Amino acid sequence: MADPGILIVEDDPAIGHGLRTALEGQGYAVTWCERGLDALAHTATTAFVVVLLDLGLPDLDGVEVCRRMRAGGVSAAIVMLTARTGEADVVAGLDAGADDYLTKPFRLVELLARVRAHVRRAGTPMVVGEAKEPIAVGALAIDASGRRVYADGVEIDLRPKEFDLLLLLAVEAGRALTREHIMSAVWDEHWFGSTKTLDMHISGLRRKLGDPAPVTITTLRGVGYRLEVA
Image (tube, rainbow, N blue to C red; front, side, top):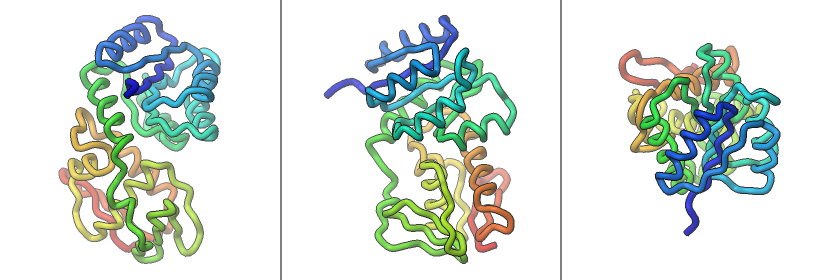
């Protein structure tokens, strides 16, 4: 079996070289490029499992690269590498189709753990996503097999991880779900490091559900989240 393919899109030679060396040392097949257009050319011809995408590229903004990758049918897990700490910047990347993010400077051990998690996850889709019957919570309807979400009959466009997250919350509607349980079910059971990715996806979901929303995602401080009828 071929080694999982990882694409690094990073214009800083020191970071790019270091990541390639570390990932190759873990047995991955690694491609490294320094420009967004080169990354798009690679993903047009090669199927990668994970893309490590810097947002500050010299030719195209990383968010735009991510958006074009998804529009082109790229199914790889896209992990943003960013020095931007503002929530709006991160949410923009997630809205463009990214699955995860790491803020620079990051620990190599955490990045490697995240890569392993996404590689494992690529072969193990959410079990609840295989449900045959539509799930209804208030005015929200989820077609799990078709991966479609409707609010009052109007379809809502969600990214893959947003869909998986909403589906899990809906299946467990009314129950308090811990952050650890959600990360295990939607991302990976061996998740390592910050769970801030979860918060950003919740923020994106709330925005897309609109105001007034068909359901409410309640934050349970120190615990996790709960979905309930608005």
